[in-house]
Image 1: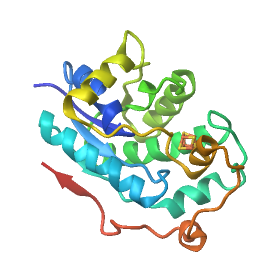
Image 2: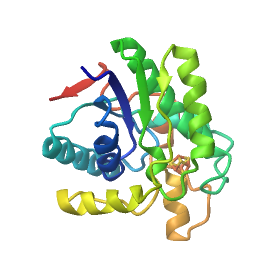
Image 3: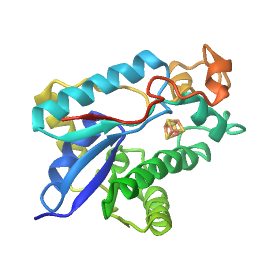
Image 4: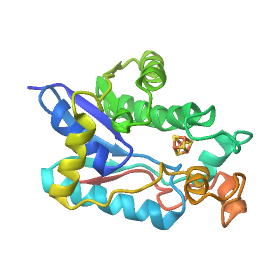
Length: 210
Ligand code: SF4
Protein backbone atom coordinates (compact mmCIF):
# COMPACT_ATOMS: atom_id res chain seq x y z
CA UNK A 1 0.00 0.00 0.00
CA UNK A 2 1.29 3.44 -0.92
CA UNK A 3 1.86 6.00 1.84
CA UNK A 4 -0.71 8.78 2.12
CA UNK A 5 0.27 12.29 1.12
CA UNK A 6 -1.65 15.52 1.49
CA UNK A 7 -1.05 17.75 -1.51
CA UNK A 8 -1.59 21.47 -1.14
CA UNK A 9 -3.22 22.53 -4.42
CA UNK A 10 -2.82 26.14 -5.51
CA UNK A 11 -5.04 25.61 -8.59
CA UNK A 12 -6.36 22.78 -10.72
CA UNK A 13 -4.05 23.39 -13.72
CA UNK A 14 -0.95 23.01 -11.51
CA UNK A 15 -2.48 20.01 -9.77
CA UNK A 16 -2.88 18.05 -13.02
CA UNK A 17 0.80 17.26 -13.44
CA UNK A 18 1.70 16.87 -9.76
CA UNK A 19 -1.20 14.54 -8.97
CA UNK A 20 -0.06 12.31 -11.82
CA UNK A 21 3.59 12.41 -10.79
CA UNK A 22 3.21 11.93 -7.04
CA UNK A 23 0.48 9.37 -7.63
CA UNK A 24 3.17 6.99 -8.83
CA UNK A 25 4.55 6.71 -5.29
CA UNK A 26 1.81 8.00 -2.98
CA UNK A 27 -1.87 7.84 -2.33
CA UNK A 28 -2.54 11.52 -2.98
CA UNK A 29 -5.27 13.57 -1.28
CA UNK A 30 -5.75 17.14 -2.43
CA UNK A 31 -6.14 20.15 -0.18
CA UNK A 32 -7.31 23.38 -1.81
CA UNK A 33 -6.41 26.20 0.56
CA UNK A 34 -5.92 29.57 -1.08
CA UNK A 35 -7.12 32.59 0.92
CA UNK A 36 -4.87 34.78 -1.23
CA UNK A 37 -7.23 34.59 -4.22
CA UNK A 38 -9.07 37.80 -4.98
CA UNK A 39 -11.85 38.56 -5.67
CA UNK A 40 -14.18 35.89 -4.35
CA UNK A 41 -15.70 35.26 -7.81
CA UNK A 42 -12.22 34.34 -8.99
CA UNK A 43 -11.84 32.01 -6.00
CA UNK A 44 -15.11 30.32 -6.98
CA UNK A 45 -13.92 29.98 -10.58
CA UNK A 46 -10.69 28.27 -9.51
CA UNK A 47 -12.56 26.08 -7.07
CA UNK A 48 -14.92 25.00 -9.84
CA UNK A 49 -11.92 24.04 -11.98
CA UNK A 50 -10.68 21.99 -9.03
CA UNK A 51 -14.01 20.18 -8.82
CA UNK A 52 -13.83 19.43 -12.51
CA UNK A 53 -10.31 18.07 -12.28
CA UNK A 54 -11.03 16.05 -9.14
CA UNK A 55 -13.96 14.40 -10.87
CA UNK A 56 -12.02 13.76 -14.08
CA UNK A 57 -9.18 11.91 -12.38
CA UNK A 58 -10.99 10.49 -9.34
CA UNK A 59 -8.94 12.50 -6.89
CA UNK A 60 -10.06 12.71 -3.27
CA UNK A 61 -9.66 16.28 -2.11
CA UNK A 62 -11.06 18.86 0.22
CA UNK A 63 -11.47 22.58 0.41
CA UNK A 64 -9.94 24.46 3.29
CA UNK A 65 -11.64 27.62 4.58
CA UNK A 66 -11.65 30.68 2.36
CA UNK A 67 -10.38 33.32 4.75
CA UNK A 68 -9.05 36.38 2.90
CA UNK A 69 -9.06 38.42 6.10
CA UNK A 70 -6.46 36.12 7.57
CA UNK A 71 -4.35 36.39 4.42
CA UNK A 72 -4.50 40.20 4.42
CA UNK A 73 -3.44 40.33 8.06
CA UNK A 74 -0.42 38.13 7.29
CA UNK A 75 0.82 40.25 4.38
CA UNK A 76 0.11 43.64 5.95
CA UNK A 77 2.97 46.02 5.25
CA UNK A 78 4.00 44.14 2.08
CA UNK A 79 1.34 45.54 -0.25
CA UNK A 80 3.82 47.39 -2.42
CA UNK A 81 6.03 44.35 -3.03
CA UNK A 82 6.17 43.07 -6.61
CA UNK A 83 5.16 39.55 -7.49
CA UNK A 84 8.06 37.34 -6.45
CA UNK A 85 9.13 39.81 -3.76
CA UNK A 86 8.97 39.66 0.02
CA UNK A 87 5.18 39.19 0.23
CA UNK A 88 5.23 35.84 -1.60
CA UNK A 89 7.15 33.72 0.95
CA UNK A 90 4.65 34.89 3.59
CA UNK A 91 1.81 33.81 1.30
CA UNK A 92 3.46 30.43 0.62
CA UNK A 93 4.06 29.85 4.32
CA UNK A 94 0.48 30.56 5.31
CA UNK A 95 -0.88 28.13 2.74
CA UNK A 96 1.72 25.44 3.37
CA UNK A 97 1.31 25.65 7.12
CA UNK A 98 -2.42 25.06 6.86
CA UNK A 99 -1.68 22.01 4.69
CA UNK A 100 0.92 20.70 7.14
CA UNK A 101 -1.44 21.25 10.06
CA UNK A 102 -4.20 19.40 8.22
CA UNK A 103 -1.89 16.52 7.20
CA UNK A 104 -0.82 16.08 10.82
CA UNK A 105 -4.42 16.28 11.97
CA UNK A 106 -5.56 13.45 9.68
CA UNK A 107 -2.48 11.35 10.44
CA UNK A 108 -0.65 11.50 7.11
CA UNK A 109 3.13 11.22 7.11
CA UNK A 110 3.77 13.27 3.97
CA UNK A 111 2.76 16.55 2.43
CA UNK A 112 3.68 18.53 -0.69
CA UNK A 113 2.54 21.50 -2.75
CA UNK A 114 1.78 22.15 -6.40
CA UNK A 115 3.21 25.67 -6.18
CA UNK A 116 6.50 24.94 -7.96
CA UNK A 117 4.72 24.12 -11.23
CA UNK A 118 4.32 27.85 -11.84
CA UNK A 119 7.08 29.19 -14.11
CA UNK A 120 7.71 32.15 -11.78
CA UNK A 121 7.58 30.15 -8.55
CA UNK A 122 11.02 29.49 -7.13
CA UNK A 123 11.60 26.03 -5.71
CA UNK A 124 14.55 27.44 -3.76
CA UNK A 125 12.15 29.64 -1.80
CA UNK A 126 9.23 27.21 -1.46
CA UNK A 127 11.02 23.97 -0.56
CA UNK A 128 12.87 25.30 2.52
CA UNK A 129 9.54 26.58 3.88
CA UNK A 130 8.01 23.14 3.31
CA UNK A 131 10.92 21.38 4.99
CA UNK A 132 10.79 23.69 7.98
CA UNK A 133 7.05 23.10 8.39
CA UNK A 134 7.56 19.37 7.98
CA UNK A 135 9.96 19.48 10.89
CA UNK A 136 7.52 21.52 12.95
CA UNK A 137 4.59 19.13 12.37
CA UNK A 138 6.53 15.86 12.32
CA UNK A 139 5.95 15.23 8.59
CA UNK A 140 8.09 14.61 5.55
CA UNK A 141 7.80 17.36 2.97
CA UNK A 142 8.07 15.99 -0.55
CA UNK A 143 9.74 18.85 -2.34
CA UNK A 144 10.68 19.25 -5.94
CA UNK A 145 10.67 21.66 -8.82
CA UNK A 146 7.62 20.36 -10.61
CA UNK A 147 7.86 22.79 -13.52
CA UNK A 148 11.04 21.00 -14.62
CA UNK A 149 11.32 18.13 -17.06
CA UNK A 150 8.43 19.67 -18.99
CA UNK A 151 6.24 19.60 -15.90
CA UNK A 152 4.73 22.99 -16.66
CA UNK A 153 4.13 22.12 -20.32
CA UNK A 154 2.54 18.85 -19.27
CA UNK A 155 0.23 20.74 -16.91
CA UNK A 156 -0.86 22.97 -19.80
CA UNK A 157 -1.58 19.95 -21.97
CA UNK A 158 -3.57 18.22 -19.24
CA UNK A 159 -5.50 21.41 -18.43
CA UNK A 160 -6.61 21.58 -22.07
CA UNK A 161 -7.53 17.92 -22.05
CA UNK A 162 -9.75 18.37 -18.98
CA UNK A 163 -11.10 21.73 -20.16
CA UNK A 164 -9.89 23.56 -17.06
CA UNK A 165 -10.06 27.28 -16.49
CA UNK A 166 -6.54 28.76 -16.46
CA UNK A 167 -6.14 32.06 -14.66
CA UNK A 168 -3.85 34.79 -15.98
CA UNK A 169 -2.64 36.22 -12.68
CA UNK A 170 -1.13 34.68 -9.59
CA UNK A 171 -4.09 35.24 -7.29
CA UNK A 172 -3.91 38.15 -4.85
CA UNK A 173 -5.25 41.64 -5.44
CA UNK A 174 -1.72 42.97 -5.78
CA UNK A 175 -0.85 40.54 -8.56
CA UNK A 176 -4.16 41.43 -10.22
CA UNK A 177 -3.29 45.12 -10.06
CA UNK A 178 0.13 44.40 -11.52
CA UNK A 179 -1.56 42.66 -14.43
CA UNK A 180 -3.92 45.46 -15.20
CA UNK A 181 -1.23 48.12 -14.95
CA UNK A 182 -2.97 49.99 -12.17
CA UNK A 183 -0.88 51.25 -9.28
CA UNK A 184 -0.14 48.93 -6.39
CA UNK A 185 -1.81 49.50 -3.07
CA UNK A 186 -5.40 49.44 -4.27
CA UNK A 187 -7.50 48.09 -1.46
CA UNK A 188 -9.97 45.20 -1.69
CA UNK A 189 -13.63 45.98 -2.35
CA UNK A 190 -14.50 45.21 1.26
CA UNK A 191 -11.44 46.04 3.37
CA UNK A 192 -13.29 45.63 6.67
CA UNK A 193 -14.14 42.07 5.83
CA UNK A 194 -10.73 41.44 4.38
CA UNK A 195 -8.90 42.65 7.48
CA UNK A 196 -11.29 41.38 10.11
CA UNK A 197 -9.81 37.90 10.10
CA UNK A 198 -13.29 36.58 9.33
CA UNK A 199 -13.34 33.11 7.88
CA UNK A 200 -15.51 33.47 4.84
CA UNK A 201 -17.56 30.62 3.51
CA UNK A 202 -16.45 27.58 5.42
CA UNK A 203 -16.26 28.54 9.05
CA UNK A 204 -17.39 25.13 10.17
CA UNK A 205 -14.26 23.42 8.97
CA UNK A 206 -13.38 21.31 6.00
CA UNK A 207 -15.40 19.85 3.19
CA UNK A 208 -14.46 16.53 1.73
CA UNK A 209 -15.25 15.92 -1.94
CA UNK A 210 -15.17 12.28 -2.93
S1 SF4 B 1 1.80 37.35 -6.02
FE1 SF4 B 1 1.01 35.24 -5.74
S2 SF4 B 1 2.45 34.22 -4.31
FE2 SF4 B 1 2.81 36.45 -4.21
S3 SF4 B 1 1.53 37.13 -2.52
FE3 SF4 B 1 0.29 37.39 -4.36
S4 SF4 B 1 -0.87 35.46 -4.55
FE4 SF4 B 1 0.78 35.10 -3.08
